[in-house]
Image: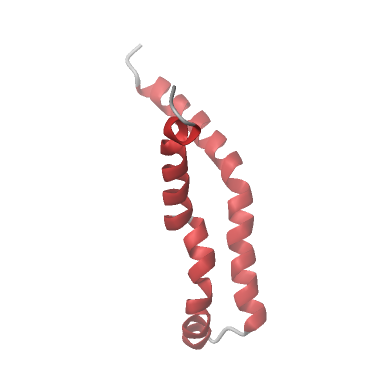
Length: 83
């Protein structure tokens, strides 16, 4: 009989890799880019916060966009397949 970690280590490793290289990494390192971005584009703190809010809004829309992508992908592949 395998231990709990022995059965689920793949889920733990893949979750850690996903959070370490995806959106989690962006939120951890975002503060490094605040000053260079605000100097480059002339943004104040309000505009920098709004740019982060746009990212969070996009994150909330991703499940719906994925469903639409599947719908259109299936429609295109069905139309392109020989009948």
